[in-house]
Image (cartoon, rainbow, N blue to C red):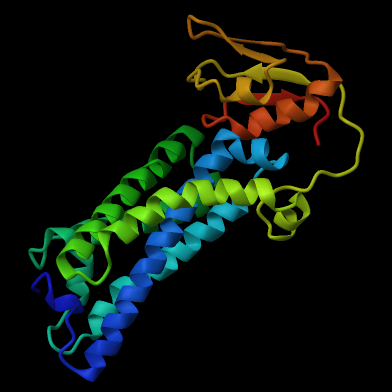
Length: 268
């Protein structure tokens, strides 16, 4: 299949299919940027800094599901072009049609599907192995971004400047929404966690798995009164923090990218 044939309509039927392919591709790119941004902000604790609440994993899952749905639709549209047959094999074998940019999109989509499937099977896998495989999602995003940019250059249907604008604007827009919108609205949207009006738990005992801890310092940013990262890269922490630190410690547990912090005792 020629690089330009996919989006150059030669019949009314192909005109509609080409428009569907272009629209689904743009929605996929936007959802992908939002999913990546929300996942990073949630994992690093930035959502809590801007909203005062912990981020919910369901927000990242929802955006990822939209990305997967629109990306799959974008790929399937090419099966319905009349002028140049595009079979299932073209969607499954990356370099089958000899177009590198198509290969990037196909491999990226297949990686996203694989990561999504393993996310549902997470309980049956060891945490370390699951996390390493889940990180392939970053590779998938890079491949899909390359596919989108090369496609924009080849077809001319979407300005590269427009794509760059989406990429650069998504993080500041998301942070602005977190800062401007009231927390109640974000709770209703299912993006952040509601804080119940309960007394803070007491009797917490903190334990850090030194084999998992990579000393990223995320826990220190969430609970500086409990966790301190020394200049030698060694993490020091209070094993029995004060009751007033319980909320911050729980936030550090959720934000730790390696899931190395464990709490024993009364938790909420």
